[in-house]
Image 1 (cartoon, rainbow, N blue to C red):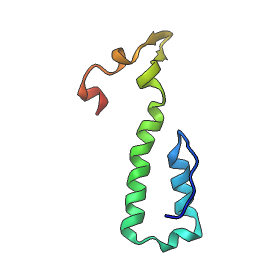
Image 2 (cartoon, rainbow, N blue to C red; image 1 turned 90 degrees about the horizontal axis):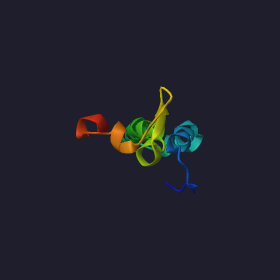
Image 3 (cartoon, rainbow, N blue to C red; image 1 turned 180 degrees about the vertical axis):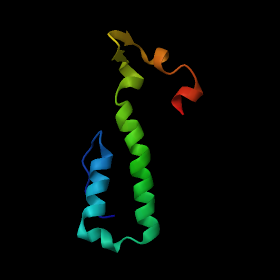
Image 4 (cartoon, rainbow, N blue to C red; image 1 turned 90 degrees about the vertical axis):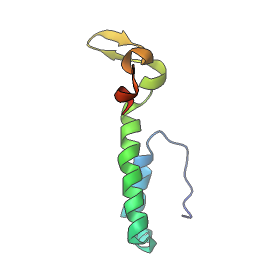
Length: 76
C-alpha cells in the first residue's frame, strides 16, 4: 500500500487513519471492506492485550491465562 508502518499493539488506529486519508480513495470498494474487516478482528485482539501471556486481575483476584481460556469456546 506504500505506507511505512511502525511496530504497534494497536493496528486499528493505523488502519482507521489510512481509511480517513485522502489517499484511500485509490482503494477499490473490496479493499476498503477488507480493511474494515481487519479492523474488526484486530480490535478483538487489542482488547485482549497481554492477558493471553501474563494473565489479568479480575475482581481482586489474579487469573493466569490457563484460567481465563479453558477451552476453544472461550477463545471464540
